[in-house]
Length: 233
Image (tube, rainbow, N blue to C red; front, side, top):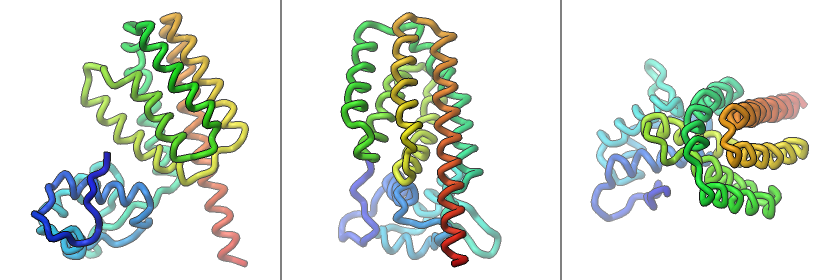
């Protein structure tokens, strides 16, 4: 849930450091703050009705997540969401999700299976007609399998990177063939989990994550090619 803090000064008490971090992060991921846009501490502090220290702390935290870049003598700017960045974020998911999934498969209950099927039914009923809603449901599908894992550090790192991937996904079209694969892969994953077949579940998940990452990179490449072509015409 994103705080209701906006980039318009409010007459209330100074917002918390976490609220400022969440607001700037949200505006980067949603595209309100565009790629390579300068992030001036004083200007952001004024817009957010804050002192400069919480803004500096937020930018450093976002730097750690890879969403903000610092250049000597130029300060902070929004990192472009390019193919290299998407590849790196996708690889984090590829490494972490199988680890988080294993415990779920080993301890799954009938209620857990029913919840996954309920979410998947919603995803299929939506049938990609609303990208933002599909992303929300897809995140819930995956998070429901990992949220009770004892390793909260791994879960939180995964969740941060998942939010980045989800934000990118809402701005890029999903190819028809990829749409069909997503639905089949989810169903295959549910079936492997139902059987408590850890090896098959991990195999299906790795294919699912790998294909998703490659699809995003391919779509970004197409978008970049079209933009370059348009600029040259």
